[in-house]
Length: 166
Image 1 (cartoon, rainbow, N blue to C red):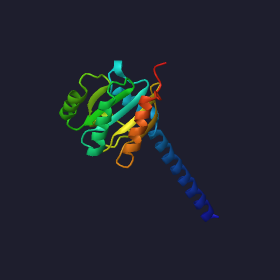
Image 2: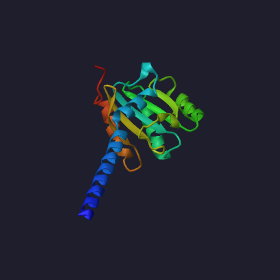
Image 3: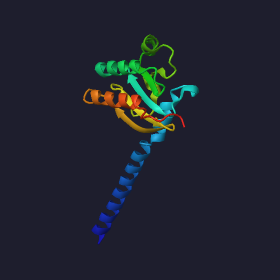
Image 4: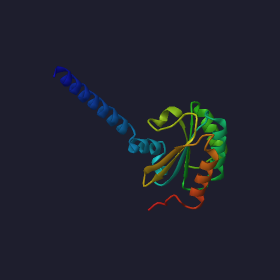
């Protein structure tokens, strides 16, 4: 009888530990936290309510970074595109920003450590689809999906698959 009670207590402890682990995991994946951080990097007048936000870590995967800089430059006049250049060296990010995108308020540069709890790999660009101020989709852009993601993003921008302001 004593062994059965010990086994029951052990199972109860495991259940509580599992519940605690799952709760912490789910709370850590809260999209509102991510949304607040990605939009707070912009000034209030240019905060994206709807559109496509691309984060580009300047010192990341060179092929992916160059491809996304080229994509961003090609689409820089699209009002639904927002780009954040991230770098440890903010001077380098600002230089690229001024050289490539000059005075577009949808294009900003920030230190890599300013992104807070965004799900961001410092080596690869990310994109976020924002609708009504909330992130509804996010994905990493890396060497294995670069071409398909670029085509998908281009189609979103060209075919107005991103909603306009209500």
